Image 1 (cartoon, rainbow, N blue to C red):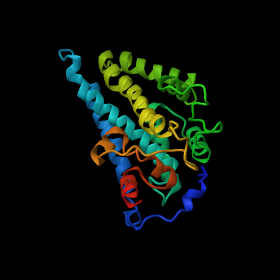
Image 2 (cartoon, rainbow, N blue to C red):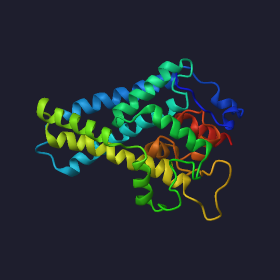
Image 3 (cartoon, helix red, strand yellow):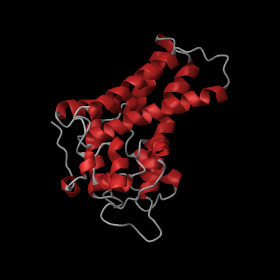
Image 4 (cartoon, rainbow, N blue to C red):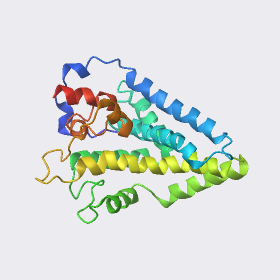
Length: 253
């Protein structure tokens, strides 16, 4: 069984508002996100888009990108043991499933790296940090992605792409617009709102111990940008809180 290496802040007493939640809500939300992604992708891959212009497809691409981001956020919550804390096997199964759907990412590898990030934010031991050499957005992004992608994953995804194209006869444009492009855009979205903005060093230097700052936005926009991950200081302070509870933590502080 995968063991979670919770940092000391895991023991911090939570505000009462976040302790009166249904024990099945996290699992229910995870199922909704996975189901929405599967249904949406299935419909879009079978859609005849030959007569549509790209600008007409853009809202649909952004919608699918949003669902891809939801898959990763769900796997992230599973790494913190909060998708279904009553059963660790189910919790980690959900995390493994959502990362596989997202891009064949290895759950156990990301789990270990993520807790290294929480234990050592913005340090040389942090696998998500720019290491002092790749501080601008694109350099940091490519340095970040290099640590999580492998040739094995790329080859496997290429095989799946060609299987869909030549065996299942899914149109190339559909595969590109609704499977490839949203996953790439989602990685940019997750990196920008979940790593670059909250962990870039502020003018006065990092505030210990979390080295993270909150990007305050209206609740609806916070949800749309990255499932409330702008409340990043709150996430590091209370890593055992679900993404959908972070606004309550922010308001309660």
